[in-house]
Amino acid sequence: MTQIIHHIPELREYLKNSEDIVLVPTMGNLHAGHLSLVEIAKQYGKTVVVSVFVNPLQFGPTEDYAEYPRTLEEDCTKLKSIGVDVVFAPGLDDMYPDQQTCFVVPDEAVLEASSRPGFFLGVATVVLKLFNIVQPKTAIFGKKDYQQLRVIQTMTRQLNLPIQIIGAPIARAEDGLALSSRNSYLSEAERAEAPRLHAVLEEIQSLVLQGDLNYSQLIENGLNTLRAHGWKPDYIAICPQDNLSLMPSSNVPLVVLGAATLGTTRLIDNIEITPAN
Ligand code: AMP
Image (cartoon, rainbow, N blue to C red; front, top):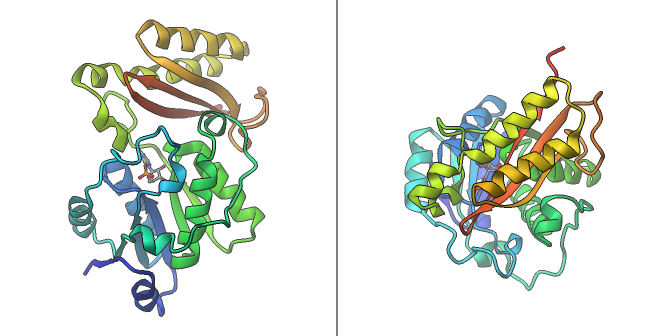
């Protein structure tokens, strides 16, 4: 039976004899991408905890914290139907009882961090809190948020947390658009245009795999394609998979990442480029 728990003392009481806990942190409004993380979580441990918390600390002052879709009842129905053990849905007072002055400040300064100051401070801080509350052995994060996954892996290593971090594949709609809670902001016409971000990244992936090393030109072409179709691109970047701050080179596995705004909706996506040899 799925337990729905809102407060930390009840959660600790419920989990006190559980070993082998796997945590899937989310902000709710769950789609098939989130549910795929739960399926992976089941392979890694006995007790699967899904947290649902829209974290104000990771939203900038002009971002969509107030509008972010909150659908806890539907989320719980979905999580029950796939046999999650615990849904942890804390309130603001549970997660931030004081005026918070103690933060995790990741040292990443690239890509999302440049575009969204304070975002990774908010993400890393809430994830560390969730780790301390739930004390999982393993936590699952989607590669959809590639840089977030790297920030969490770095935090876990640098702060010596005894937690295994697993990156899960991106779940996509049939037309290639990465599933995201923010897709619900798209108008019908924007939704039809939205898969282009994936298509542009895929085109770059394919050219790099064919041996094209002119990364800056590939990026420029990708940005121009997006602009020509009405997007406001934020960045396209080609980076080593294990360190997004370094320059790409032909002898390490790469990832191509992109962020762009369509109408008023900012979308992110990425594709790993792993040579077949
Ligand atoms: P969010 O609720 O957007 O904070 O996402 C919660 C977790 O689900 C994060 O680890 C995301 O990377 C992951 N996630 C979101 N969308 C997808 C997707 N389309 N495929 C795989 N994982 C995803």
